[in-house]
Image (tube, rainbow, N blue to C red; front, side, top):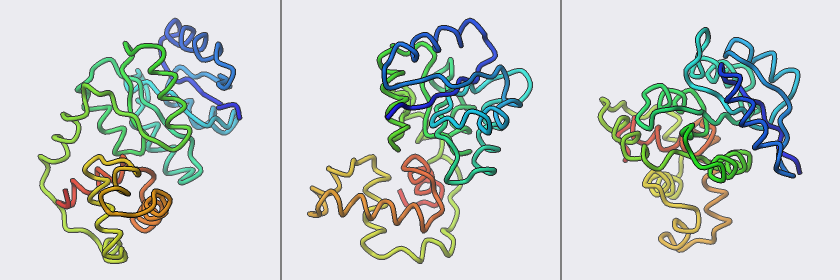
Length: 215
């Protein structure tokens, strides 16, 4: 299946380079482009991308605001957003993840890594630039914690255990090994946890765990 990709960046030359790179792949297709976050809603409505590569810093409407609007408008039907940023310790990129982005990649990343990241988020996984991972989680950990809301009480004891394992960064296979479960069972638990907590993906799950003092 071809992955439909939309590009949102205020630098035309950069967009052209990324479009050429993505267009060279048989399983990826650039279906639309925009130069500002204010154009994202119309772009998504017209082109129906699976993934939006979104510059985090743009002159009018930034990538954080555009991401939040997409998630608010489309909910679970929103395309996956992969944020592009110049700095690995970018506060705006972290804010984009809170807004609903599936991760962020540095603009200076290797082409192979960018392509792999697009495929990963399209498949429901998350990507965070390796150099920024620790700083990102430390950012959330440093905040005053909030008491979990009533949605947390809907989780079973097993689901709470799986939540904590996932918040520690363990993959489904690793959680299965530690908890002595089938990997498919772990995947089902993760899906139920996300649904009950109203979260989009595992990145949001980790943020939730840190913000509520669970990890």
